[in-house]
Image (tube, rainbow, N blue to C red; front, side):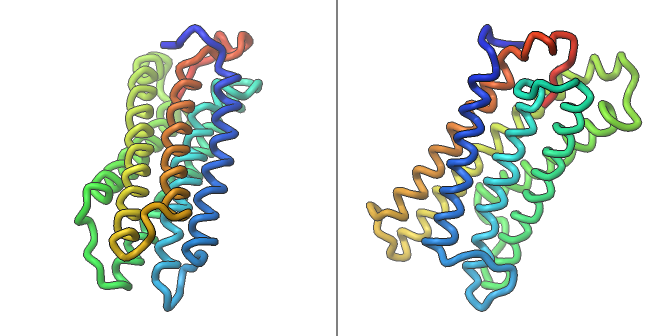
Length: 230
């Protein structure tokens, strides 16, 4: 299914929002939250890895992977490889980002998997992994038959869209959860950091919206005989 507008203008908005989101989350975690560290006596620095990798990896790079078929003026096989590799990078960064949250909890004696955000997060990364593996086997190597690929494609697109929308929504939920914890610990509700976190969540939602709009839009004319995948 495609809406009757060109994908390219939407893709430019995606790129701009992606850069904005990456900058905002880095400013928050480095400037306001003190930086990033894998090992530190300040366990909050370990946690900071989580939002950075989830937003830049799973959401932004994952979004770029989704729109690669609609935004790049390249041959189908090249776009397929870019799509596959970007999703793999997004998946790996997402896994590391989730592990960082577990590491922070374990080293801070905080319970794991007690919140809706954490439950959805585990579901998202699991479904993302399943989607990538299935796409690799059916569309890349060893590759399914023409009939299997044809029958699988609409479900691949639908399932990928569902997982991505779920990931974006859960990222926004994560920003809300963390900001609520910080405000309950004394952070000013109308301070610059609180506004920054809220704006980052808004940019995340807008980014995801334009990713889906791009995916639903018309590919360049020279791609009329290629297939679309998410």
